[in-house]
Length: 366
Image (cartoon, rainbow, N blue to C red; front, side, top):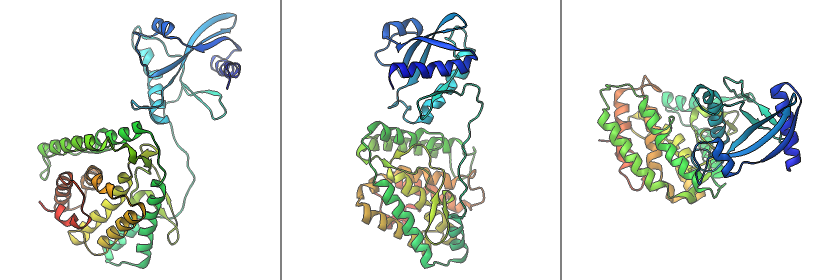
């Protein structure tokens, strides 16, 4: 889009925002010298990409700054990151004394237009309706009846094949991988966020234990952040409550999370921790039908991806997912003995250089 078209789009947007016809006189990138007069301090690098806009409305000339955000790094990688920051700025700039005033927050549409969202309070998503049965019903049945059918194995293979397929899409974007590993440790939905939502004074876990887990996970962050060659397309929350089966092996996935690109171990551990978790409920260890599912899933994935390196990556991801299933907030009714074994698993896998698929039961012991 050239400057003339850009000016016309801005005219249409400002006319709608101000309720009166607007004529744009000048649009240009805001130079460093000019930016210094409007923003505090002159930096060699800035998060914002500002444009100076001069326009006439009701016979009066006005000047404003239209600013977008850089896309790469610094937690601005996803559209939702940038939207969240800009929406917050619009809501808060005008409450701080002597701060430059925000006039609106908006977005660029798919056809290059500008749309105001400045009066929004909450956002929502509208999706299609999908019928079927969530995968956890299969796991409930196996746990309660100890019945293992050919369809159970076929579905397990289909779920493994799905990850083989989506993980085959790679991208060269080191900052996204580093972001994903940082989020694994520090995000509110990940390790530290889950820990922060544990009740205090539990009998089976202490503050000292949580501190030790966090320290180990920070060490893992520094070990993994250099593995940027592993960046792949991911789901991000691939667990049995986000997988809807129809007939046979046909399924739909729901609610992908935390970005399009990440570490394949995220998806693999999100599902396979549930084979361990359900097996603990049935057998007190990884065994029976759930060990079959665990082995089928992992062996198929490793055979088809040839990604043996993943066994040197999964440890903090398994720690995160174990913290979820061990949580009395998410799972209030599981026996204390299961929670203890899950915390044994966390501590032991975080001390393991290479995850051994045949050693899961040893990881569950003190």
